[in-house]
Image 1 (cartoon, rainbow, N blue to C red):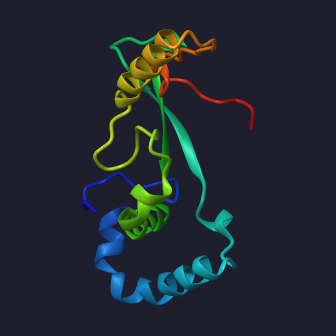
Image 2 (image 1 turned 135 degrees about the vertical axis):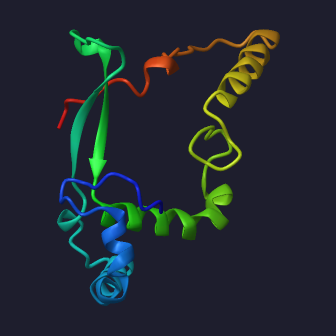
Amino acid sequence: MKACLAPGPDGLPVVFFQKFWEILRLVINPMFHEFYIGTLDMARINYGVISLIPKVVGATDIRHFRPITVINVLERIFAKVCATRLSPVAERIAHPLQSAFLKGRRIHDGILALHEIVHEVASKGLKGVFLKLDFQKAYDHLDWSF
């Protein structure tokens, strides 16, 4: 993890964890054990702050901002370790049509798959319903249901 990354809501930057790792690992490593056996209270580390980043100079409308969630470095460490450990099996456990967030797959790969499905349905005279989502805006919206 790059030392220059911004700190999370707790104010602790990456460089803090790097500098004091020999001490911090004595607390963090047991947390990984708790995580793996299912007893870790994730609420202790699993939180973030939503910040609005302007997309344009002089932003005045909510559409001119991009929401990002700032999370603590400890949560980033957990996410990185989990992703690293899952990467060897990710291809086998993810659905073949999962077209994003896996190494070697792109969100736009779904467009090609959709084209092939539409062609198959049309050529066989099958009936079906297709739902089009706006990929461009997919990451620009917040879910306020919480």
